Image 1 (cartoon, rainbow, N blue to C red):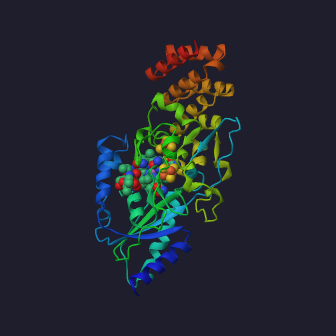
Image 2: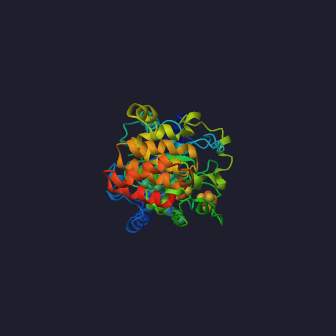
Image 3: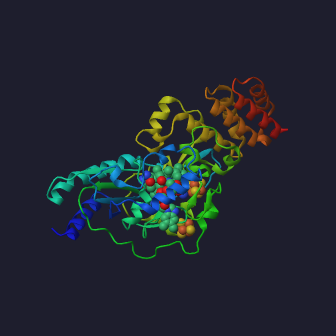
Length: 382
Ligand code: B12
Ligand code: SF4
Ligand code: SF4
């Protein structure tokens, strides 16, 4: 079988598994990507994501020394329903990719099926390594090299015809496959800068360059400690991830009407979560909420912290009582301190009882951060 025939048969199998795009790239090191990653790390834009500097991420052969090619697949989730209009209810938003099954599990299952099909397609045993997100690999560089899309100014890879709501997975193989030529036009953002202007925390340092420490996705998912006070308002009602830079992208307009299969099976009840229930989440509730979803990436306290901030951003008097309860009863100082901040944001809504709770926390909470946040909230209320 010619290399082209082999590629075509692999594409057929991958498409039958539900992948929206499939491309092939050489497993040669990604030199340009390495330079960009080094500059990103040198500037400290990675924040606490130490794993980004561990091990070379630009060389697929570090993961499979015999690798000759990389099969890159794209899973499209653009047709997740658009978020409902704000209703005034105390709800928090999840990023689109988190509204259904965990993409790591879905992609890994599908890549395993492709892996099993390869020996018969190729005609001999094949050494492989499947990667989804967590392996030390520059997945966006590989996706672009495999012709699946181009680098948007938002740093997301945009797949023509699908937009940026695509997730990538890779299969490294010890087989020489014909590289996919770059995707057909259009291939750039042109003069557009909508994503840069829409970012609620001004996280873009320049086109194609993100200071991850300011990104709502980083703050709500990766950051485990206190969220810098000056960025909390920017979170708005987002409690897990952020799509603001994708929502405004012209390449994503009409995405929710796409007919492509959505392997993540988004659930309507996951577009928004009840913020009070999230703030009061118990262990059993957390297990039920996070099971087989991307929410597994964060622990219960992180979700409670995020809920406290979103309640503080709600402007609603109904948020005061649950926040006072969290300030007085939550065992986590992180949650209590963010509840105190949130009460300060709701200063015009505070009644004498909630002010008294803040005063008690300011004087006698066992944690210094909680005392400081409660004092600041009282100052805001005076
Ligand atoms: C760390 C990480 C994050 C961090 C940092 C993101 C960032 N922009 O660096 C945080 C937590 C903020 C994050 C957020 C999100 N992430 Co993320 N993340 C990753 C992860 C694990 C590593 C990315 C990385 O190495 N960053 C360091 C920078 C320097 O590298 P890079 O962004 O990949 O950029 C490279 C290229 O794009 C290229 N490049 C950069 N600029 C330019 C400019 C030009 C002109 C050219 C030619 C090339 C180029 O050079 C860079 C280095 O090689 C990847 C998975 C993986 N293993 O790659 C997922 C990944 C990038 N994330 C993904 C997703 C879906 C998201 C979110 C949309 C989730 C959400 N809804 O909340 C947001 C989007 C935020 C954004 N605008 O990027 C997808 C992106 C899919 C896509 N279509 O691009 C990935 C690929 C996961 C996956 N398996 O699908 N993420
Ligand atoms: S995901 Fe949100 S916070 Fe992060 S860069 Fe995009 S718009 Fe900004
Ligand atoms: S919003 Fe505009 S600038 Fe940003 S990625 Fe999309 S096309 Fe590019």
